[in-house]
Amino acid sequence: MKEKITDRKKDPLGNMMLDYQNGRENALVKVWSSTLEMWEMKGETMFRTFKSMNRIERKALSLCKGYILDIGAGSGCHALYLQKKQKKVQAIDISPGCVDVMKKTGVMHAEHTNLFSLNGQQKFDTLLMLMNGIGICGSIDGLNLFLQFIQTILNPGGQLIVDSTDLSVLYDLALLSSNNETYHGETLFTMAYKKNQSDPFKWLYVDFSTLQYYADFHGFACEKILQDKTGKYLARITYI
Figure 1 (cartoon, rainbow, N blue to C red):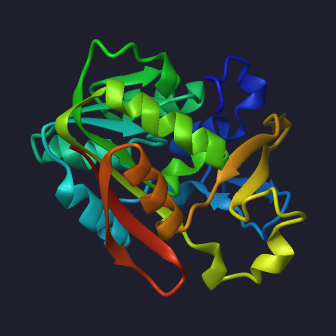
Figure 2: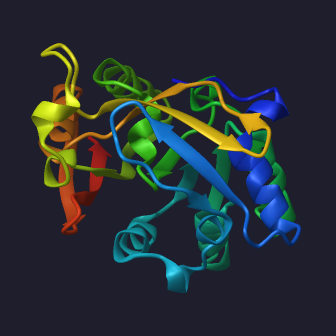
């Protein structure tokens, strides 16, 4: 899992969003994957309002309760909506540019940090991870470590609200895995914007059955809330 970014030249997403925020309307980040067909990430998409969000995002926000941690918060669009609904929310991101953006847009509690830097002194009722947010786990091994860790920062009865994508809906799985030891949802990304390029980083797309299996193994209850025709789904994982 990625550490927080300290070199701003390796923060293409954050730099792109700062440019967009400052009036560069055509700003976008190019994304490459080791296994998947990828697309560009546009500034206007990252700064979308609630009205522009899809039904999975809207449903996810409606499920948030108590003290909320928005993980990989990006522009802060979800945190801002929750703030307007008088919710107590903290937003974190490993991108320094994203955190600068959030502070400028009015996110009250935005911090430049890695999730695993949290020491457990603060406990949350909801962990929110949208835009394939559980991808930060990077691999199935990373997912196991993640599910162990979040028990240290969740209150009893707390929940993880997360979306991911079942790639079997979009791709021939035989073409995604080079060998039987590699889970088909594990990939490697690189991002670029202008002269800024990220280090390659691991990302995970996990199908619901696999997510449910590992959640159950670690003592969580896991339910699917919604799924669309592209394989994207919303899940709630509850700390029993």
